[in-house]
Length: 217
Image (cartoon, rainbow, N blue to C red; front, side, top):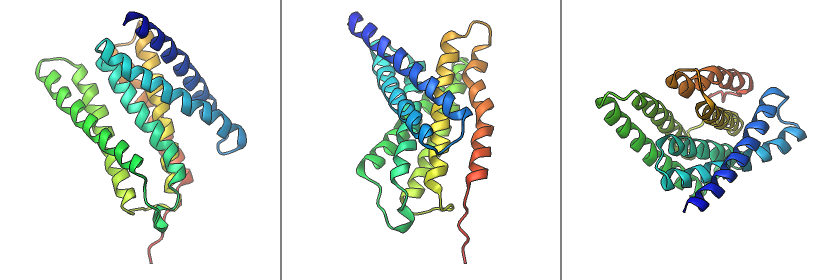
């Protein structure tokens, strides 16, 4: 089993490095052109493979840190890509069964994170705060997705906004994992939540500048 773990670890590191590098490139350069889409494919597959490998590793050697990052980054990456194919929900397009499965699984994991977070806080373990934050964010994402699946849409280009938000969120997860694993000087809580605090304003900025609000008559 140790050999299997080491092989998966190597895959996890390589895929994560590709995802982090590709994500950094797409964050700092112009959006929507051909290079962006090409680099985005490397980011997508790097993040998905990294997340699956991390998920498996978190059970071989029980690790809540790996589990949180794996689940969170997988959902963000998968739904961020899926919404590019769900551009016509406002015109009657139905989400696929895969979309519902992804969202319902995220809800289950989010509830688990929150319950375990409260348990840790009750036992004076600060890591419970991290679990509560990620659990709450995950529930809000799932709630938003279900509303969109049911046609409750406020922006004509909802699919683009969600793609931007989710892919940036997945990048935050990758950067958080990199920082936590390599952190030698920051307080752990800062390493865990710092990237979210730094990059979240970018999500709001890009969402605001790209939003095309539906005007109700």
